[in-house]
Image 1 (cartoon, one colour):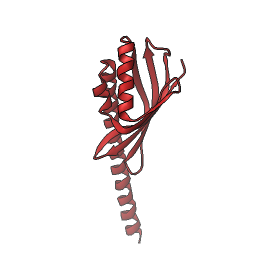
Image 2 (tube, rainbow, N blue to C red):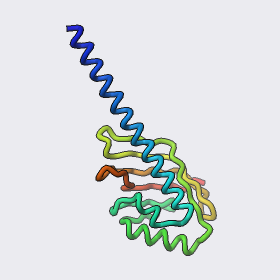
Image 3 (tube, rainbow, N blue to C red):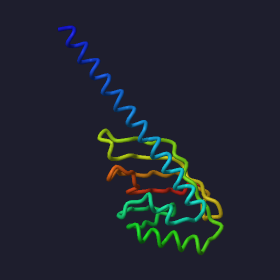
Image 4 (tube, rainbow, N blue to C red):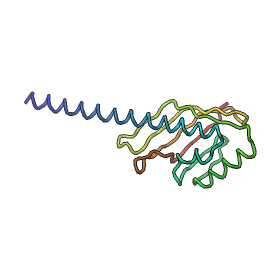
Length: 145
């Protein structure tokens, strides 16, 4: 009986180790996607930014206004960059948590702004894995500085 318990415990530990390695890999992937998104944002490359968004993206901006839908948000970013060519933002992730079923992720961190109405604040993003690819479903920015 002790042998069966030992084997079960060993199996359980292996499963947990595998699950943690999978989550660590997914966290690193989302971090790399955020880095690429920040690079596109720095270049005012709206097409580059929007490749990480789902079509039904919801965005709550730092000034508490909100937008819904990828096309609407693309148009808003294009207008912002046209009207304010020196504006710049960066998101700095502090934590990324992957759901138990590996289909959702929660990212939190700080954002910084330059040549904007705010100097930055905190943000959160909800990522969804569809077709084996992570995309942003929702982002919330709060202006604090």
